[in-house]
Length: 150
Image: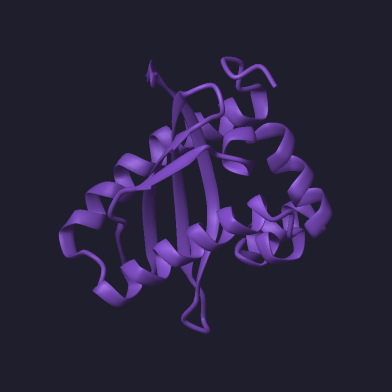
């Protein structure tokens, strides 16, 4: 994967999220998330990253929201998409989680990822609280950072 070339589908989603996320973030700071929701959001993203690390497609796919599940189709297709288009999400060398923000059943979580070459990336996850009160991932925008770790 060419780390500097994100590709048109991801560029489109990244552009869309660049428009949507600032609006969502402005709402997020108005009220904030209860600590219980913050913990659940962090657990969902960490668990999905752990499932990727262990090659567990079904478990990784289970953390995706219904909109993602419909778009992608199967757990195997989901795993292949992440493996080929989101390599650093699939197998990060390290991950640092920032505090999630949001309100009214919507949340945003920034995760700083380091790839195997020491390059830094920011993954911006969007999540939605489901009717059963669980949180599921509705999207992930990935962008390279300008610095490299040594």
